[in-house]
Length: 318
Ligand SMILES: *[C@@H]1O[C@H](CO)[C@@H](O)[C@H](O)[C@H]1NC(C)=O
Ligand SMILES: *[C@@H]1O[C@H](CO)[C@@H](O)[C@H](O)[C@H]1NC(C)=O
View 1 (cartoon, helix red, strand yellow):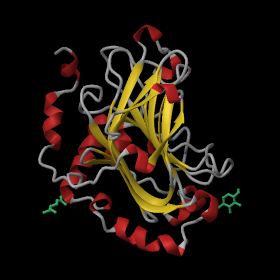
View 2 (cartoon, helix red, strand yellow):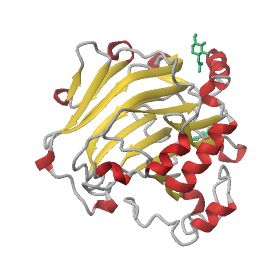
View 3 (tube, protein in one colour):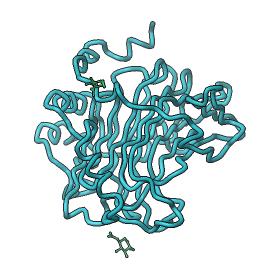
């Protein structure tokens, strides 16, 4: 009871009535599309192979990866995060090609950053293109629900034209590709990853709160995987690129899908989410970027809100 009070019920009603583009998603079984990545002993597949549990204990975390890489795609799963005391524990759901392009990798992230008992989980989204790791594009948020109580859907849409991060039916972040981004817009085939690991040194309040293994194992549950896109064979096709003609049709299909269309109703939900739950955006961090990066769409009200507090004082946030 006490815990639910953290998630102000007033805000929950902000998001009702959104039509769901996600009801009809076909979900795949683990074996068809995914493979264990590390910590095999801590990766537990359900008997029907439709869900997987990732554990972190004092010996290892765990993770899985898609068997294919995709040139653009829609990547989605229902996730339930660890409860109790997840300080220092990071659960990441992301696309990357860092294993193939070490110096010029692309990446799109959801990273859940743990928290101390009784405080809500925080999370960030980020993107890198062509190895731009020196230039973070983080945004940080809270959620309007307790992500350790129930499953919620987290989705990443990536087309040649834009990127959208979704939480359930709410588009929380949209990045429209701009010419000026150049290679920093992700362009090479990526795989989907999901991992749980100990990031005690930075995740929670900049490393102030470490993972406490008295509460181990930490458990993240994943189910209802949905991966759509142009699957490319990492060996034969790479280095692929945006201009790969074989994938153009698939990109067109993605671009016309419900997942890349933000309805007016969803757009106002996005605005409300960002007003109430976003507590950091690189677009308003004038110490880091005196000029906002080219894809930033500056909202004057947001800029005022972040005037004093828009700085990320450490990787762990405030
Ligand atoms: C889901 O599928 C049903 C039956 O195919 C269709 O009538 C409905 O419009 C679809 N809903 C969405 C949101 O796409
Ligand atoms: C990516 O970076 C490499 C190495 O710095 C560079 O040669 C290449 O042109 C860049 N690609 C794009 C699309 O900007």
